[in-house]
Amino acid sequence: MREFEPNLPDAASLDDYQVFQARRLWNPSSTWTNAALSPWEMPGALGSADRGAVVGTLDGDGLTGEHKISLNAAGVAMVQSWLDNPSAFNRGVIISNDDIVRLLTMEASSTSSRPVLEVVYGITGRS
Image (cartoon, helix red, strand yellow):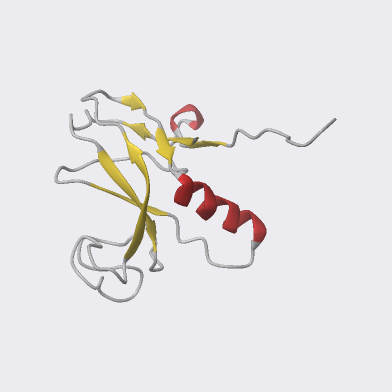
């Protein structure tokens, strides 16, 4: 599995968060009801036009700080598609459950608090 490490400044829920592939363009000023320039299909980006398949899980442990998002096979394929076709839209991911999560972004003032994407790979077929 591959992992992404977001930083949660507030305590996370004890419930796990599902991570979905985002299908719509959005920006930092997007809200519960609006994506980039138009409304989400459903508030909270709950519509099938807003989000795709579940690509991973953020463990809800009730703690603050770094957390790992474990990507499933669909999540690994999503990231690979970003690498294979850099000119295509990378719409990112949507993190969701019945609770609220606040994540620090790449704009966080402390560089050590910014999210990190760690890609672990192995070389196969070598003799």
